[in-house]
Image (cartoon, rainbow, N blue to C red; front, top):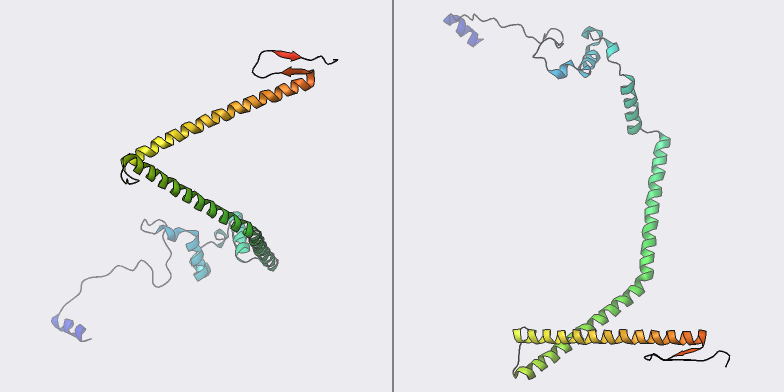
Length: 226
């Protein structure tokens, strides 16, 4: 009031008339579809449903347009059935969940029982593998020591196992070992072939009464009747 009185005393006059508020404060706001400034969400059926729910018939909204279509009604019913299942459906779902949990528990118990049954065998296999690994490591160590002793005798001084001379000697030994192994395999193959020839000759002798001497081209034929 003091500020108003001071303005009146100063003779100030306000020559501004504000435009009427477009939201119509005296009633309720109804969006104008012809106004480009109207937000699109205010022209939807959901907004009209909101207006009709708040103001009723005074909103001017046709309630027949607010009822959901058959497709929308089916979707609503499906959503309600999913969110609010019947007591029977809830009981069936609970029974299914309990059965699945019981089956999972049973499978786990069977798996544990099977593992426990195999435990002695697995422990024995592990011990055997560990024993074989130690034997192999010991043999490798002994072989390395023998190679070092051979290198020391060959070169006349102590030599490191990572030196080029020692590595070259090891490669020579490996090459000789592979050569011996190849010769041994060849000998075994020849012996196997000779053994098969002897077996075949013995089989022919039993069937036809023939005596076949391996390594010769002559055959002594015995008459079956003699």
